[in-house]
Length: 371
Image (cartoon, rainbow, N blue to C red):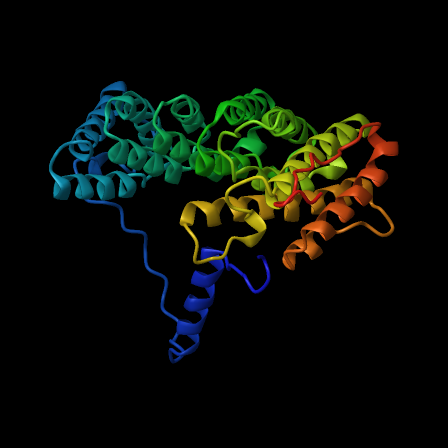
C-alpha cells in the first residue's frame, strides 16, 4: 500500500547531504580570483587566436579525432584520460571554441554509431557539456539508435540544451520538438521515455519559450501513449507516463479549449487503466496488496500504477478546476479498493459533461463469486 512510503529524489538527498557537510566546515576566507588556465596541449598555440585558417581548423579536428579514437579504444586508462582531455579542450577564444565544438560535433557524430554502448554514451555526454546548439543534430541521430543507453544519453543531451534551443527559436526549436515527439511515440524503454519527457519540459527553464507548440507536441505523445491503455493491452515503457503527465500539468495554460478536452480524455484513460490494474481481483497478485518486500518487478509495477493515479488526478484537477474534486488517491493510500472505485465514478460523473465520454471501469469478479 502507499501508506508510509515516501521516496526522496536522489538529487534532493545529495543536496541535503552537501548542505549538511558544508554546515560542519569552518568558514573559509575569501580567495583571490585566479586567472583562467588554458590547457597545455597540442592546440595551445591556437587557443588565443581569433582568426583560424583552414589548416588550423583541420589541426583541431585531427586532435579531436585522435582523442576520440583513444576514448573508444580498448585501453581503459587511456580512454578515461582522453575523455578528460576532450572536456578540458573546450577552452580558449570564442573563434577557437566555435571551431573546437564544430570538430566535436563532426567527429563524435561519426564515431558514436560504431562505438560500444559505454564509450558512445560517454561521447554524447561530453558533447552535451559543450552546450552548443549544433550538437542537436548528433542527438537527433542518436535518438534513432537501436541501443537504449544511446537513446537515453541523446535525450539527456537535448534536455541540457533546452535553454539554447529555446533561445534559438524558429526551425531549430520546432525541429527539436518534432524529433522528441516522434521519438517518444515509439520509445519502448521506460527510463529513456522518462528522459524524453524531461527534454520536453521547457516550462521549467529560466526563460521558457512560447509553450503552445511544446504543449501540442506533448499532447500528441500522450494521446498515442493512451492507445494501449484504452485497449487494455500491454503498455511499452510502462512506468514512464507519469513523467509526461507531470510535465503536461505545467503547460495547461498553453492549451486551447479543444486541446484541454483531448488531454483530459488521454489523462482519464491512463488513470482509469491504473485503477483497473490496481484493484483487479482476477490476477494472481492484487497490486493493492503488494508489499515493499515482494518481488522488485511487482513493487515497480505497483509503484507505476500509483504514480499514474497521483499525477493523473493532479492533472485532471488542473484541467477541470472542480470546486470539490474527487480523490482516488486517498482510498488508494489505505488499500481501499471499493473506495477507489467510488471516487473514480465521481470523476466520471464530473468529466462526462465536459468531454462527452464515459470512463467506466472494467469490473473483475472477487474471489468466491463476489462482485
